[in-house]
Amino acid sequence: MSIPSNISDIARQVQNGELRARQVAEAALAQAASNRDLNAFLYLSPESILKAADALDERRLRGEVLGPLAGVPIGIKDALCTLDAPTTCASKMLLRADAPIPAENPTTHGWRAPYDATVVARLRQAGALIFGKTNMDEFAMGSSNENSAFGPVKNPVDRARIPGGSSGGSAAVVAAGITPCSLGSDTGGSIRQPAGLTGIVGVKPSYGRVSRYGLIAFASSLDQVGPFAQDVRGAARVLEAISGVDPADSTSADLPVGAYEAACGRDIRGLRIGVPEEYFGEGLDAGVRERVEEAIAALERDGATIVPLRMPHTNYGIATYYVLATAECSSNLARFDGVRFGLRQEAPGATLGQMYGASRNAGFGAEVKRRILLGTYVLSAGYYDAYYLKAQKVRTLVRQDFENAFAKVDVLATPTSPTAAFKIGAKIEDPLQMYLADVYTLPASLAGVCALSVPCRPLAATPSQPPLPVGLQLLGPAFAEERLFQVAARWEALRTALGPLAS
Amino acid sequence: MAITKADVLHVAKLAHLTLEPGETEQIIVDMNKVLGYVALLSELDTSQVEPTTHVAVSHAPLRLDVLGPNLTRESFEGEAPRYSDQGFVVPGFVEG
Image 1 (cartoon, rainbow over the protein chains, first blue to last red):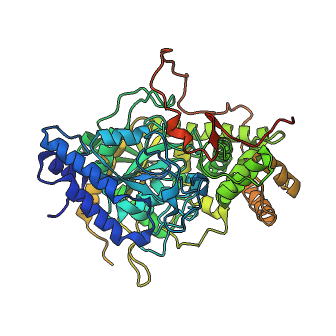
Image 2 (cartoon, rainbow over the protein chains, first blue to last red):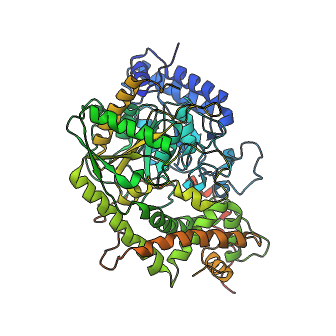
Image 3 (tube, chains in turn yellow, brown):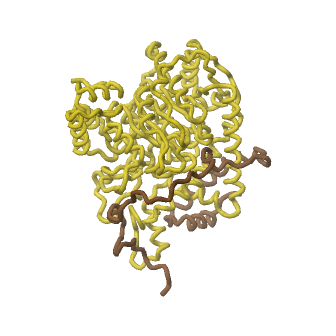
């Protein structure tokens, strides 16, 4: 029995009994086993997944109507709390302190959250199978997934390359066909960039669209949870399931959830698509530009109006982001102190301060320490105005760029990343070079608008490399996710009609 | 205005991070590189610009002052590195 690859077919067949959730789970587990070398999962318990699948099948046999994600396996980024699996944020900081850490599968020894993140609870409610915890950059800090304390994730398209980050594991499990969708979190591009580099769909919802209760905080004014999926409709269905106000998150917006899946069928005639010049400047790879321009041209032929425009503060996004995000992280990560959970290092006779310092030094990796120190510096007396306050003011200018653009157009179309996936190890020695790769995703995070990445046609294969994926980033005003799905689904259909690039 | 070793040690203390001896040098290099790049922001005149602290929160939502379900003590005490007598155990910090 073959398992459909898209979410709506799986859910329909599980709902009507053509397919059992157990069959879906077994197929996904087999696929996970044959892709173990990707290092995409930090924790995967076949027993608990099969048990959940059996429970779902029994509910159907009892006559219950199953939800819109019935039997759909969904990988969960390890930054999200889950009751039935450990949560480590890919950090040694969240390994338990009470026993020696096993060399094999150290994350089985991770912190056990006393509650499900709201998004996880909503997925369970919708009938989804919570399918393991996915690898990531430690505390979501990174753009390549090389900052995981438990080893890098490989890109399923080319295993010598990075899958992007920080939600690299969530992207890889979908790109490798293990699960049809997964959840990630996006602070400055951590869903869109890996989606683009692995050739799948990834959505960063508007700030406030999705509850962050149970998401381990990195930068609270920026973090959002969102879906990865193989197809646009699938991403839309998952977003509908996880969206909406949550009394446990005071930053979640009390606004009606859109009909995202229904928006996928709408035509785009007359829709105004803005193309900001600053996203096509120096640093953009020529091959990536060609693929993105091809997509924009196809949308124009399909009836959209293309409007060239300027967003003059785009290039200040990186500097602004790395001040604000590090400042917020230095505050958020203060809670990891060896007292209430996770790792603790305590020499005999140590003072409380020495215990804090030693625990945090042993628990955090190099990039996390770097960001905590930078963030502490930009907030410290004498530097606050020059760095933190200045960056908050430039954030206003970046927001105004978006307000001005959305006064003229309905959505914006840009590349997701300036290059295709780079080789593992290529940028790890130079944090600034790594940060510069986020140039196109950061501004939307600063402005709090909604964004998604949908695959273009990949680059042409060469003798030394397979066809590497390229992402088209679509940006919409806050809470205009429907428009993004409308355009993305249209481009997905046009891309399918174009067929693969002749090599 | 380059970051010095004294600056790094000062913020490390503020951040409760005990750095390894060899670590400090690389952190000075990295912080100077990133802050050198951040200096780009000084090109912009922001004297008339209001700061953005948050994009979406216009007001703090209120709720009724009623007791809801809470986590039980048992659900998290087992995760603490040291726990006893219904409390997290830490090294003494008051001179006695």
